[in-house]
Image (cartoon, rainbow, N blue to C red; front, side, top):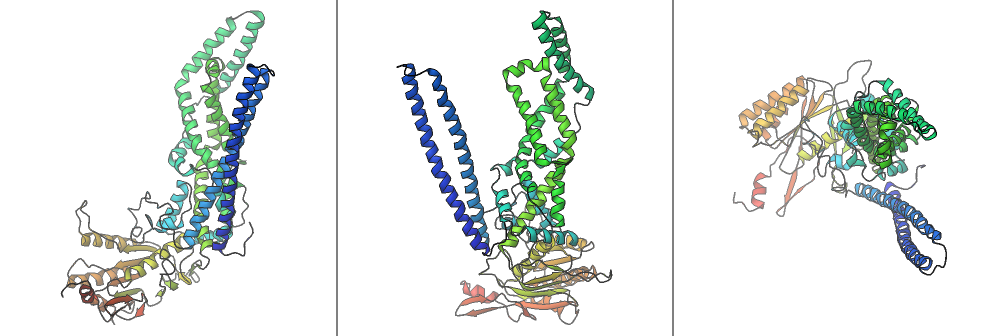
Length: 603
């Protein structure tokens, strides 16, 4: 579809209304078909009475009734499928409008199943769970798509990959038809695909290893047919029974392997059928960006489109299902039917099994890119970040420079934006401020936008320049009754992990909220100075928040790499207000006593 002059919100509303009209149209057709089918049944009953009781016409004409009814049932089922697709399209655009209008919380997949125990920032930055970044971004229909998007959020990508994603997202941005088509595919798509089991089946070694037996079984089958013809013409049955004995021996010797192949193939197709609709839709799309062209090349196997390869496997499984037919079950041994079908299934796996992993990876990446392209389309004011490049192979010191930085999970009407610069001589921002002034939110905004940048997504800022960074955060550290650890112990353990991470590439952007608040002020000051020094010596940059003014002294005239900034509040007429704006210097007042008095404590 060519780009539209409408805004994303207007485009979504227009499309939603059109799909709602389609739902209404198919609903009317559904009712008409229901009424017509009822009339046909009544007509069949009347015709049967007239034919069989009054002998008005031949009973052979009664066969027309079931044929008409069957045709109507097929057409009715098609109408119901189209109505279901239109309903899913309505839901697709409704959710898109919710994201644009900041009403998306609770409308998407939360990604709570994603394993984040090894991440040093996923929980701190609300990447997964209700109201998370993952819920905001993900349009994935399969687990592969969810896993791919999650991996991009949990680990920084190389700049070369990020730039390829930028080009792909730019191309995919206005392809609403593609995103809609992917969204309305098979209703059970998400729950049906078991990527690990499917890959294991596809790459498992063949169980029927003697290819000579395949051709022998075919010869025995042909010989069985010939012996039956010979028996019918000459009355000689001995050749048939001799061949039947040989067929029985071959069938018995391969029974275990054949049963395993047929069962596993039938189960695998349930997953592959669901994938085929995705593959077929992506195969029809023409792409120009290098990454999307590479993905499309992955969607081919030996010059055969993947959806066509899956269609061939579907035919094989139909042969497997035919074994439930009593006639074929009777003919199974003399024709070696099951053995031949099992060999056909193994041949398919030999030809295409190694491609399944590539299919799954391509589908996963395509869905992750489509998710980010929706974000790009729905929030056109959010730009791609700019990565500071090295000059003549001289490494550039780590930096993070943001203009009008906001938090993407906070509604636009409530989001206060700030300029944040950690670059050049300034390596650490010491953020002081009173309770509830927004220190943690500011650090989360820095962190979550860095995650977006390193995943290849747009960012919530007017402009963001940065070098490649990985994040280490200590914001939501709590004690653990199960592990028997205090908050302080959990925090210093996390700090140890961040310091270890800072020894690796890319450089670390650390986010430390209320650093070492679980110990006394003397130890806290000494420990904070040591931690900051160790991180700086490792080449890291970061933000540290505190409402303990003693900690701000480490940034006062001792080390030019540390810079003090603050967030402030005002109390007027017994009410506290915050502007959530970043100001230079150390905060000059505290609101702890005022807060206690405001809620009625006698202090």
